[in-house]
Every structure is written in structure tokens, then in C-alpha cells.
Image (cartoon, rainbow, N blue to C red; front, top):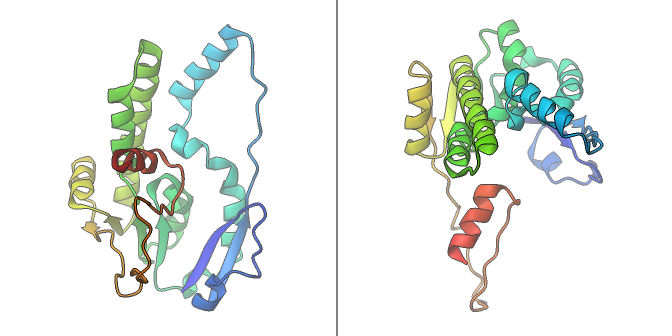
Length: 219
């Protein structure tokens, strides 16, 4: 197994344990986001919002485009034809392999869906307040539906975390191949050591909105 991943700022790529697990580990450079100056001109701000709604990718995809060139340059250095299978993590960056799939039609390619992101965008729309925010979230939802349908139909296999996600994805792309591999934990390896601290919770993850929602639910 070889790995291609982001070289995040401050990451020491020479000390990663992944190199003991993978045959080879490759990194493409993280590209810093260019901070746009906040404009006081409401007309220009509204025009930028309209431009995004009409012409740009859904925000979840749009924010990753700055890494595209860095990713492709590193991918071009790797002999793709030597692999039996390629897997990419999550749909919102799956576009990076669209052109690769066209060049290697016989190469099985799999996308591991951490979420069906269209469902997240749909929930954002349902919770949105005010006509501007509802318009924005509605277009984000619909753009994500069209984008993910293309992803599901492009890849040879799409892996979902639940049958609910699988069924939602099948409604978007009825001819796509989808299979469920439920999230789980190796309880033989990850198990209590006999020491307990009452009323405590350990969370290993990011501030991704569904994660925060889950923490607040249990809290």
C-alpha cells in the first residue's frame, strides 16, 4: 500500500509512523488560503455572492481547488499503471481523479465516502434562516447533488458508512455501484486499561460540524 497525502504546515514527514505501515508515502504541498480583504462595499459583496451561486463549485469543493495543481504535480511523478487499485477519501476531493480515470479506464478506482455531503447541504438548507441564506444553501445543496452524482457514476466502487447513506446515494445515481462498510472499532486493541475517571469523555477528531453536533448531543 502506498499513500499520497497533504503535507500540512509544521508536519515532520520524516517522523511519521505511516512510513512503517506503507511501502511508500508521498506528499503534496499544502497551499495556503489567500485571505481576501473584507470589503465594505455591499454592492461588490452581493455581486461576489451571486457569482459564486451562478458560476463556482459548491463551497466544499471550491475551497480545495487551491491544492489541485500541487496534487496533480505529485501524482504525475508516480507510476499509476503499477497499482492494482486506487482509493481516494471522500467525494469533495474525488474530482482530482476524474482525468486520471479517463486515462486509466481499466484501473479500479474507489471513493471512500465519509459522508454523503449532499445530505449535509440539504440539512443546512432546512435550518437556514432568511431568504439570502436559504437561497445560498439551496444552491449549495443542488450543486452538491449534481457533483456527487457524477462522482458516484465515475468511480468503480463507492463505499458508504451506513445503509442510509447508500440509499440516499443510489437515489442520486441509480446505476452507481455502492457498498456499505460500517464504522467500527477494534475492541480487542482499543479497550479500557482498568483506570476510569468518572464523567469524562475523550473525543479524537476535528471541529467538523457533525462532530460538534454529536458532542453537544452527548454533553
